Length: 226
View (spheres, rainbow, N blue to C red):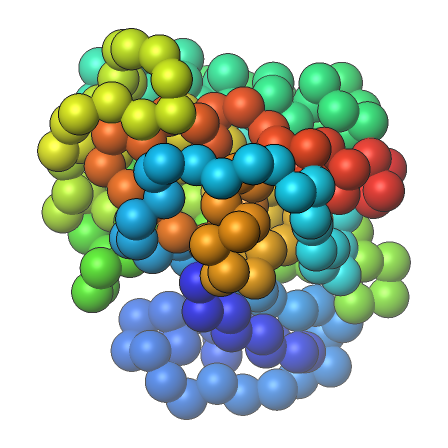
């Protein structure tokens, strides 16, 4: 849920900051970085859809090829992630915005390195997943993104129906749909529980399924962007 925005971040400063977590330096390279995370919280039962949404500064304007780093993928994760990208392309986000590249077996890394990496790796605290979005401040166009699912948690491509099932695992498609919304440019709703029907509600829980499908506000936000 916490957002960190860094304006004019140089490549050297980015590399240092991602390694040591401090020492940000500004440089006029025209880029900005936003870091978006979903945290655990009680989301079921789901309230009536109130259609709310918020928008971020950027949009995914043009094709973005992503690379799944599959070394720590649970069974069915690649198909679940592809389904999540397709869910957003069913709105006014143009078809072909998100393209699955050749999978990689090595570990993924966060950095401005010409790769939109999707991978599982340890994340600090209680964070479920985090998406890093670099965008051009002038055009507000996404330049690159990295998406990290916390490998310290249990993950599955869950089966079942309804808003939630009884499970101690997080559902890959459910959380991926939320994280992809950040790349699209739809922001977190406020944390008010009345907003929890939206995929972009900033909390998630184990066994949750309903974020696989977009709420009315998620769809309205994407359509307003595109």
